Length: 481
Ligand SMILES: [Zn+2]
Image (cartoon, rainbow, N blue to C red; front, side):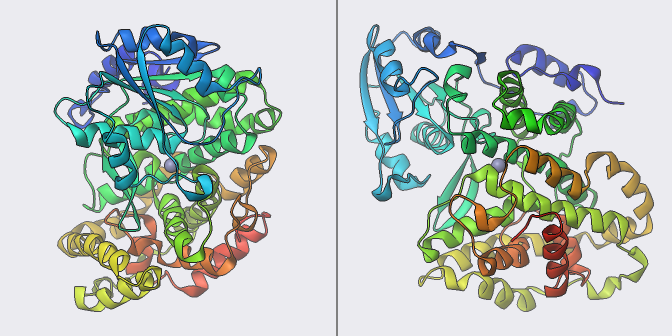
């Protein structure tokens, strides 16, 4: 039974949430949310000085932003507003992070540029979207992880769920990696600011939540197979119902309905918290995210920008839903020859390296992916008995996960209503068919985390024809390539 208090969870009531979590069965698998406060509402950015004052008695602040202008609902420049509010009480240095083409990447190099301004600083205030937040979390944590600087984030768009988690998605050696960092101390979501964000940014947050219908099942599957640990239903129970309502309200979101935007802010923030609670991103990042990560990794070679994260994840989410739908309805456990499901490290190494070698001349990306993949392959060999048991008890498994997935056709229909792009070719940096197909075909080779695609690959199902089946089925929904 789902704890009814989780069904209507409120991201701004952190003490209540932490209390509910301690009362769950197997509560020891869940981590405490150590943020001090989250505020969601109209005009909440005005309280930025109060937020800082609750964290430090010091007077020196570092405000970190990206280079582009962000306007609020009245057309005023958000960064200037926050700066003048802070200056009423504090000594503020404003550091603008920029790169050529005004696209800022979450790299350790950019984090080091922020850290170079930490001398004598009492608190960091980040104003911006996901990349600025990831960089501020990473920079403060790796500068002093035992006692990181207090961090206030003023979120300027509902673009991703990662504002409210304790990790950062960083581009390391050209590979997207989720690394542990820290929570912001305080997160401020001012609906007057986020409602004025470009519609495609808020639809990106809606898209990030599409992973709700695949990531938790991938997480559960991995745990059943001994490929992951600490699965718990509470992080997803906390968002599933509100996510369902959001899908139902897709058309209203497209119309800019403020109530629905507030709901999106709440459930998106809860989704971030679900990753912190699980101490890993698995509740919100499964195979759909890996496909998206691969496309990002190829952007350097393709000399193109990186698409809005959640928008790209949502297109990939339709693929993952097709895969799960096939797995639960078409997969025949009796057709699996267990002895053929265990390729050796020597067999897989050239395959993994070939998949990623074209990304750079240094082979860094290929080596990084192989280093992570071989851990997964080793564990797969060690847990053979668990796969045998799953094949034996597949009906039971299907019954457990059936309520956690959605039909891909339904999700695609909702996305169309939300005005969310459903094809890679229409993303803000269009992804060509060859790159998208490469990303789908090889995504399981990138990282240690297990998904349904790994199972299908080991079972001999995952091949070019299977990927083509996904592409064709998505195409029938006006989605996919
Ligand atoms: Zn995401």
